[in-house]
Length: 361
Image 1 (tube, rainbow, N blue to C red):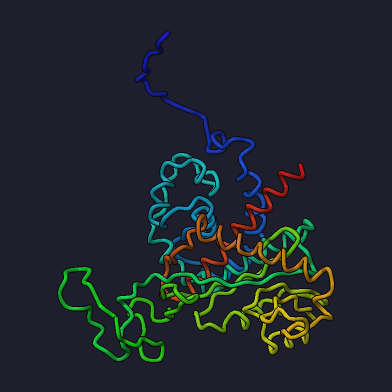
Image 2 (cartoon, rainbow, N blue to C red):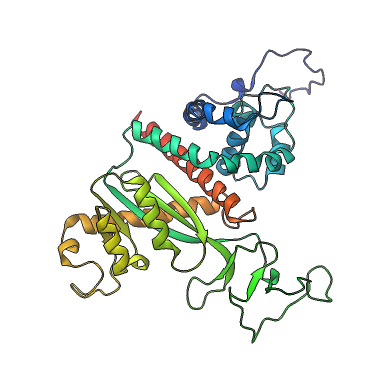
């Protein structure tokens, strides 16, 4: 029998956003981890705000909102605030009531400098990693490192000679055509007027050059969790420098580090050994004993295992670029993009931990 449309609205409903989130939804396993991490960061938040004045939007809301933007591939902060008006799962995750009004998108911009100054995103990632370590999900001895090119929020047309007028090409309306053929454009002589810190970089022969930064990840080999991140200018040699910094911060005692051929430099291998880290680096020269890592290391079974596990870091980059919104960076400058990378890496770890907990249940 055909049902009738009911136009009478309910006068009163005793419901909360929690009633609309399914009991078996994966985000229910993520929220307790996030809430516990934010409680531990509460003393840091207290130092960031004055004791007097009008109350601000809680920093917990901004961090949770950044996680949701990465988890649900929200295009922008403005779009997130629009969805927050009617998305009950978002309200539930932020501990808001059904009738609570969403905050304005300008709140992100107004509070970003305060969060960057206190390095909140890195502190939050550290708390997520500490939670994973407390659950015995991290390998304390075996790690992998890799880097990828992240396209900056700047077009090639913004890459102009340093000290020039900075004026856009004449004619052609808002998006005029520009012919760069025959011109030599280098970082020493040119810079982007949109994002001056972005570098013009090409990953390999036959590939197009783009303005971008280099994102670096240090992952552990047991469950592919991100342990540390870095974001640097795309110089072509920053990967090894960033790897040493991350290894120095994240390893304690003897450990192994898997990496591809881009890290096969004798200087890098020597510095790893000085840190007490065994370099499981792919050799540039495949012949026995002629590469940066000799047969004393490559003959062991652990070396071959590290070479297989280090390729999983590419899966993390794939998630960050497709789901996390990193295919093209949405911020200008290395500091803001580094903060995004830290929070997106934390979001990946949270999803991974939720899946591991579900599989173990």
